[in-house]
Image 1 (tube, one colour):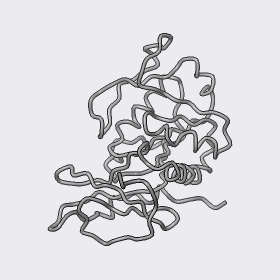
Image 2 (cartoon, helix red, strand yellow):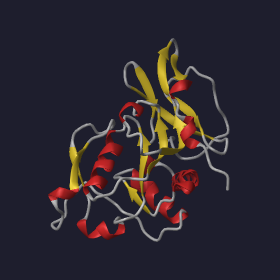
Image 3 (cartoon, rainbow, N blue to C red):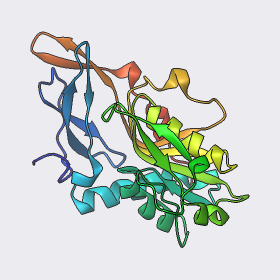
Image 4 (tube, one colour):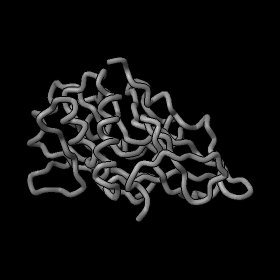
Length: 225
């Protein structure tokens, strides 16, 4: 498992075969595996397989890009968004955060659940919210946190779940924006921020080349301190 274990200083122009050195906010690189989707490839990131130091550093970059959003509570989407949610919450000065889950406890209510799927786990399951946690959300600006936005399906399920609790998220914060396929269906009133962004890749002789216009790097802009 050589991926996601450390940052590197070196980059490359491509074509790329099985990996891509993604640029980070501090000028370093994180080598990501390329996933072949047929007509395109994407850079992969599995947060709970990353080194602890790597995940923490990315979580702090996420918090930096979200500081101006005025978040009063952080909601971490399972499974991989919950690698970053406590790091982000603590960095923003919060004492706790909200954790939806995939399993139903005995006291959970059907009304506080929604169907969910994602590009990496396409089979449908249900996302649940503990009714006892509702006071942490009531009347507060909620920041939805996930690991990656790719097609947007899992994040949209998070939006729908919070709406079941009477909350419209103030923003979505992710570690990586994986291309721009999510833009067409994403709600215009919910801004998206990311620690870093990667493009989609097109097939060329010898491997894959990035399509720079598909990398939403504007989501990674940090505000002045």
